[in-house]
Length: 282
Image 1: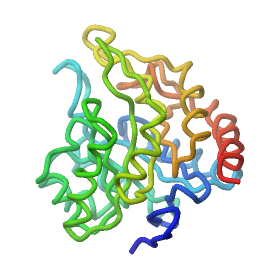
Image 2: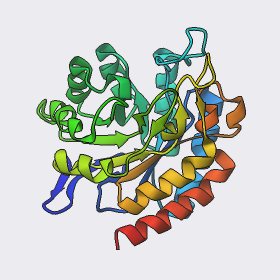
Image 3: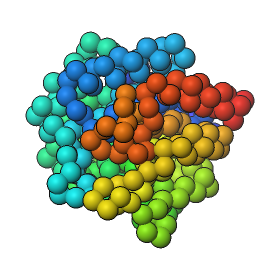
Image 4: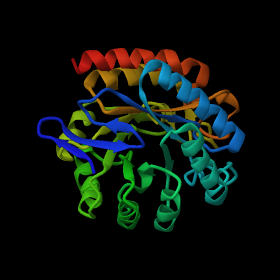
């Protein structure tokens, strides 16, 4: 069960990591797409070493199916059946909590057997049956704000989860559609979402916020150089966590390479964000 602080809102604890707008920053990180067991374990082990060295709570993230792709010819991932034992191994052998996306109500119960947080993709954030199925598992639910929603609209989204009897809801900002193939991040949305949801932990997705949906024709583009800029801005406002997709070689990644941070560059960025967080919450 989450804790409730009368002035700072809800604390969602999962797998030993605490998410709250007033607590030290937590990190959700990992490759966009699950590419296989050895790749996932390699990245997860490197992230664990970094998190322990820097002293930050870490949730490993990867997607078993990239259901929302620009082209039907794009690689989607290994699928749920192959991913579940990999997620379970990461939890058991490395002791890391795991987050993955779910796209259909029938996936929720199966995924919840191997992960700690079920994530609702932005384009599906208003799908009531999906939200209710995720809530029913008892796992923490991270809902990404749709690119088409105002931040105050997330009050109704979060309420679907909490009114189903699951208070462990996190809300994530990932930018809003602006013109064609462009997203913008309104930093006002971060405190607004915290307020309208009654203090739910707010996470900022720094890598999808620089995505350019469909920007390369058959694939999405991105502006990796602005990840650190937006992440610093969000953490300076004050958030519960940051979501950063990372890869050993982003330019060779099967999805979202243009907006992912190189794994070797992540520790310095996280260290910087932790310094910003300490100042923001002093």
